[in-house]
Length: 537
Image (cartoon, rainbow, N blue to C red; front, side, top):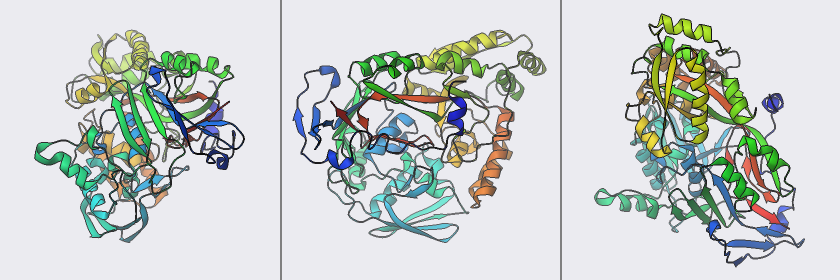
């Protein structure tokens, strides 16, 4: 499979991608930016350029393309990656992940653990919100308690019994039992720190924290949003870590993948995180563009509502595992740029079980299992999707399943509407993706613990007391090797139960302007855009 082995074996991390390939950073800050209006309406913004000491122009307003819009503006209320990408620019978290996937302090200056059930944190002083207010422990305690009260983000606070302010810059978190993933959870975008005063004013008298209220401490500030069109953020010059080179970023929503490529070739966008596979060779051949490949930490999967027949029968779910030609999906939809999945954990993730055999494509085994389950004459069900590429994956599965007497009907919905639909327990099956390389507890708790049924993420309403017990056991285990051993055991049980059919990890091929510099891409899947610039001839 194309490039597969090399990518899987590579331990190289792409940090501050292409930094230094164009010009040293000191050459990017020698002149004040000048702004000139762009008459091209499709770009929705002005072009800002800086002349470097070498005479090269560095454009500091960048445009990226994506196929999906954000779901909302309130971090605890959004557990999708599209909103999360924007949150990483507007808000900060207490902790963050480094290039190796290890959790490190962010807004936290230092912390200590007097016991295995108590954390005491000291915050950086002088951190400003976008409205000029100083961030204090009062804002932090408010933000965390508010997130803990939201069903969609509650999984980040399992076993937490107290979040309390100590003084202006210190606070404590207490858990009922040892809770090893605490620091990992505090790096999640749902635990972003908000301005207490702003949120309380927005929510007074039954109001809602929304677009007009957005106020974080991140490197970029909210500027303008047009639904299903674009989202623009601009630089926050008083950012506590120092202002970014980038002055603005516009995230344009272009649902059709080939249209994104056309926009890149035409200079209407500067960066696409994942090129349409059939366009990759064309982009590589374009001297004005460049590409970078990395295995995604996102698993595309088909999930089943296990409360509805026939998916309340594990034999039916396993039958569909055997009837799913994952390699065909990789080859047909992604031109070989991907890895068929053998687990609910990504290969680049912590605790991945590489000893699982997975389910080979075996129609005879699939037929036999359906017969054992009492469905020898076949079944019919609906699969919900939210994009063209997921619809095409469902069409491939349609052909596979048709050979064992199974009919699937495809229900295409807008992404936000689909999430709401899946939370109501009315659905039968769906295809979506999940990314969770750095926090196994988050993956397991959100998707497979009984208590997470519904909006939190367990849209299968999957319930296995043994899995629940092991997830809770792993939470209390601070020894990394012992904890990873539990995670591997959990993966084996879940794959046997098959509430998901993990289909593939795509190999992302990012396409971009040849002069683009400063996008941060980590091996474990995280990407950060706030310091991007474009060098122009």
